[in-house]
Length: 538
Image (tube, rainbow, N blue to C red; front, side, top):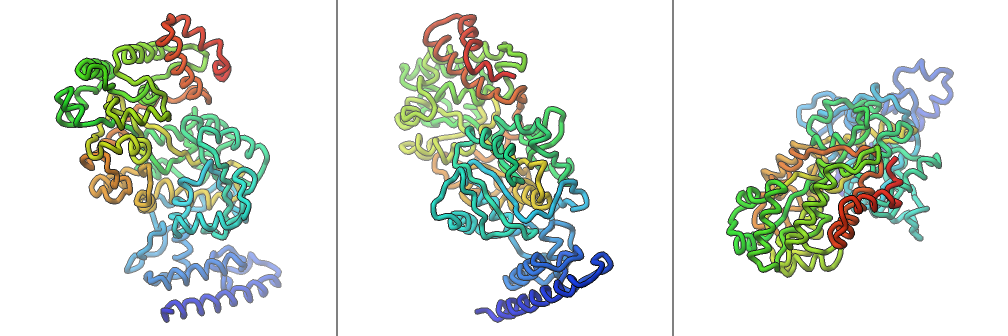
């Protein structure tokens, strides 16, 4: 064993014993407040207890790992993200040190000091990576710590405490619902109403409004000490989604999920004479241009190749800046416009007649029956990876007719939290601190960091993100495309909580009634308004 580690471990044990002794002495004092400094009181809260012992052990583990010496006080400040004293050499660590998003505990208005910090998620796809960067452990350590705590794993009812501790020394508890994101809202509602311990939970942008607009379900991030300045490097569309109807910031996102239009460059050249992404973007840069190019492609391929994959993919892009309904139960002019675009593309063969997530949807990409897909960032390594198995390095990415996002995570805080300091620390690490977000991007991440400085580094050095290993595209220029899309997204907020579900139902009704059955628009609109989905508008 390395002699430095032996010494550090021995010193830690000695100091831990000293802390316990001091705690015993302290228990006999008549006035804790009269003691300004106690031997072993690492966090300077006037009490010596097991938390101080944990901090001291952690401090010496930090020093033994080869980092430059700093005092225990400065180490504690670094762990709580307060400003430490300057050192001659900055600590070399992947753990979030001092950042420009420092939040003073004095600005935190919510309760702290709870012994258990609970995070609720719908699955474990992203959390181990984010928690690992927060606690300076590996993603595998987080997963192993979680799954090792229960032999008969029940993702709905069994939420074990795991062996890892938060920076304040609280026990970490993860509630994994084992669901898809679209199914999680009801479970979170039940969890909040139950009064069960819950500090932080995730929302999907499409249903986050239900929680963000309710002050009994989500706390303002200003109550954790955050200000507008802390969010200077986040993308506007993601920040906008985190604001409630009154403009109060309630959520923060670790990722962005901008989308674009991925297309087969060889087919574009063969049928349209298009030889570069710039030419392709020019040809499909508006919905009218997109339809015109789709008509040409269908004609020149004798109807064998569609431009777009599905109406569902088209819907993802179109509804960024267009709402098909309003909170008063009206069908908007945008709904009719989308229906007419969809009908034109359907009838000319410009869009396939498949449904998203079907086998045929991916098979059409494999066989060249569709030239393009509307895809989000996570779709590069997801469904496009499957659809391009026989056409590697033949795809390119452009923004398409409209910049859009598809998916994502919004981190929000329960107003009843009793671990506000850990809430602030976790949000700072996962949603604001560039180095943590870059480190997460290196680790099999399907999304990109919601941090402009981090994205600038990825664009400059694509290998910083695991997505760069994707073999679909001819070049790595797609990072710039995705970044530009994220900058340019013009998002029209939802006006009621279930709007995304209602409008996706409308797309299916447009397909079945307005297009396939040839019903009039008035008849199609009546079908909307007499459906069970319409009752969700409230």
